[in-house]
Figure (tube, rainbow, N blue to C red):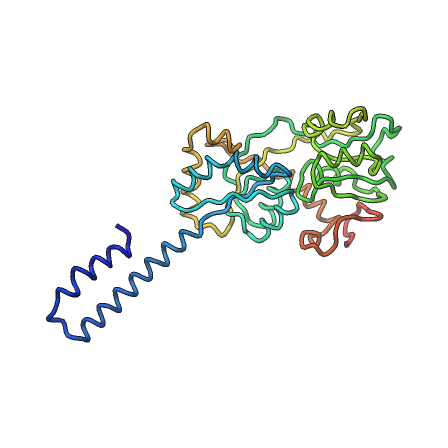
Length: 316
């Protein structure tokens, strides 16, 4: 029986069966019951606020909702609160939610995770399923004569959204010291290839896996990998926001470790796993943020830079 129900029962079975109470006693008892009931209602109302699970979906919103439906329902039932899925179209939108701690849980890819951990006090609890040896690459059209990174000096470059490890942080880190004619931020990895294919950008950055996934869509245009970063990008992680109560955080961790394997697989995380080492990834993010300070997160100036000087302490 819920707290309000218990006091309703007490009210109906006790107060009106105590005719010997004087007015003051009854009034005092009624006030006490009202205050206790109100506390119970507030407690239940607080629980009903629920949790928000955030993911980046690009343009696969409906597919993402279907993918996480069973998992969010399971988590909701086990915790006893509503768990709402909130897909973000790209990393930039996800950063807005992370910066405001609007996502209680985040299934975050490496670039987002590094920012969330280092700047916004999110805690990694589990690893996401990921591709082994994930690498960031720069691609050009096959007929482009460029063979070295330094030849991108004064050329337009297509990057992914701020927050992408392979599409944003690693390529800027690798191109440090150059001045580019322009940096263009593509909403999706497929758009990066589109801009390279049409000549809008001389080169574009994305992951090797995304390149193999999308490059065949641009036939007969052919691409060539100009540069592959030698560092392995760490797996993404499940993050918990700093505004989540410690006890609830522990409860979420236990539930996610005990989830049926099929649900964990559908949601894309590894139960009972350790979060990967993010030391190098965070150092890359910090170096890039020395080039492009935090202001870009707050929409002060869009990163459509002409020209883009990749040097420390360049204000935007």
